[in-house]
Length: 481
Image (tube, rainbow, N blue to C red):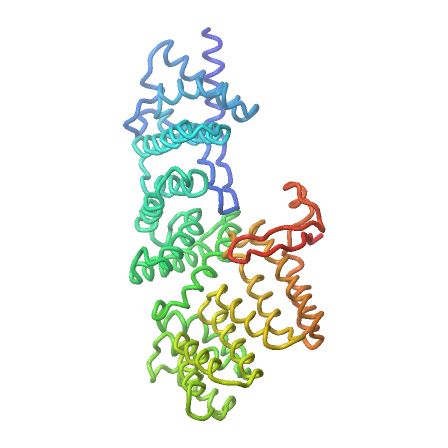
């Protein structure tokens, strides 16, 4: 037994001296805690450590630490590892005073149990156990705010049906509030989604929403500037999702200020200062942000608009009022006035034209994709063989990756299928849009799932597939390769 004790302790020391594991690069997982390192006596933890155990009890606990890890790491045998893990965890929660992997292992065990049962009572018990382990880790080693983020992450992705959204959201906020610009990367995407939903559903105030939206932008900027190694890829993924999701909040009047719109859109004008579409877009955005009349950027863009992009105003009436509102960045009032004009005019061509313009306002400016599609379909119903409304609907679908998924991966990729359907249909009925349709199909083809992705889901290329999210259309399965 003494030989076993010495051997197991030596092996445990070997494990504890391993170098840290690199963090995962995906944003729907969190990095495994650093593997343990050998530490000097007098560990800095209030929890029981191996050094404080005596005789055969210490020997049994040390051996349990070694053997349970073998069962998990080498055999993925969570059932067999569990009683050994319990002996290690409850015997010396402080381990050697520094290592924390046994907390992560316990969480992994309970997650495995959770995923392999349909018993609701058992599942609830496993969720409570996971929470207890996180709390114990915080008690032993501190890092309450990091632990809050980890727990919120697990609640959001794994235990959503067993925890209130308020509790999850508050845990994410704890991490963001405490860490600020250096908030943990894995909280950003799920917190952004919850924040976006709560702002739209008026569950939080505009002021609170503005505070956290601005903090997310700052955190992403800090993370990208200070990341190292594989974490930089994680921040790249985050940058493809969170800012796009928050951009949709531009549709809320007064949500973003002049600084936001100026920093985001003025560079677009500088890069394309001869394009009237760009000039007018930037001008409207600066007005929407409430930029002062003496703002140098607004003065410059307005001068370009007046000299390069002058269009005679329409005669007095709803149409003129609509354009005035639109040109001032008052998009909601513009929609109302354009809709009023559509209802009054008997000219079918004008009805179709301005219904499509309303659809574009909902797409580009108010970021309301379902409403945009609704008006595009109304416009399409007024004219035969008109491809432009279907081109717009395809763009709506293709732009929905961050709305229907995390920005990358399956849920974000499959939106390209119905988008391509719409572009191909537009080209079929209206040859005038063929060039643009072909260009968009080529551009987005690369973003479709690969053969391995559909094979792993038991789906065949060419079969029918129902895309959910707000799109709700049946399409044809295609692969990028």
